[in-house]
Amino acid sequence: MMFLKQYVVDLLNNYRIGKHIKSDEYFKKTAELSVLENLKTPRRTFIINHLISFINAQNYLEIGVRNPTKNFDRIQCKNKFSVDPGIEFEDNPVDFKMTSDVFFENLKRDKLSIKSHIKFDVIFIDGLHVSNQVEKDILNSLEILNENGIIILHDCNPPSEFHQREQYDFMYSPARNFWNGTTWKAFYKFRHHKDLFSICFDSDWGVGLISKKQYPFFNNIKDEVQNGFYEFSVLNEFRKEHLNLFSFEDWVELR
Ligand SMILES: C[S@@+](CC[C@H](N)C(=O)[O-])C[C@H]1O[C@@H](n2cnc3c(N)ncnc32)[C@H](O)[C@@H]1O
Image (cartoon, helix red, strand yellow):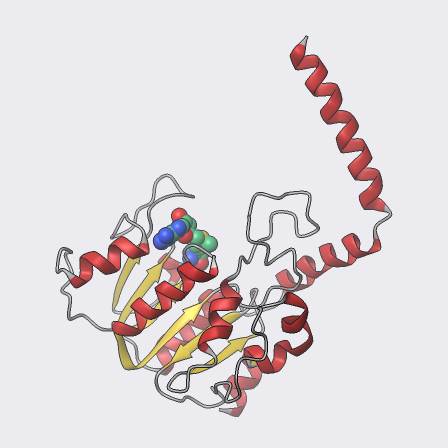
């Protein structure tokens, strides 16, 4: 009886929400942004492989792998290493089955099968997409990044405030299951670092790059923080300057 009652309540709720959504222009426009973003090319794998060849990278590290057939297995680099605690993909066939924090701590203490003095040329940060974790991942990655190395971050350019919601599990949002988290806030914060340079390719939800060396069209924000409260509306208005948003094709052609 209880089960039947809950079923009817759910059915009514779904009907009411569905009716509301159909008449909500904002909802429809925001949902369309997911479709447009998904059509953008090239995807992250192509960009990462291009950068590996551009700087002749030998050592690649991926933080947050999920199903490796989607990206990791397709990366062409001499030495590849992967880190993931296995939250989203049960098989989790990675080198280091642990969170990024534990990985970096163990690496520092020489407790891993790779030595603490190892340096990476390309580090792809795609683990837990919340700003304070991404900030930690960037700081730790900078310590093991070669001088001409590049840190790559997925999901730096959320198309709407719902795509950059803090919680993934809110499925009635117009972004539905698409989720960029708050990675952009960490990327934007590091854009203010005077000794680091960055760019964000306008493809595959924003592929952000951070480096110690200044590659063509990489820059940083010289003025004080312009979006001190990390408001999405400010990002949306100034995303080109605030992210140094660039078409990947233009970058390849112009650099
Ligand atoms: C977006 S998926 C990675 C997708 C993959 N890089 C790709 O390009 O297809 C995020 C992954 O991060 C992992 N993850 C979650 N929290 C993490 C953490 N603290 N450290 C490292 N990885 C984490 C999850 O288990 C999940 O597999």
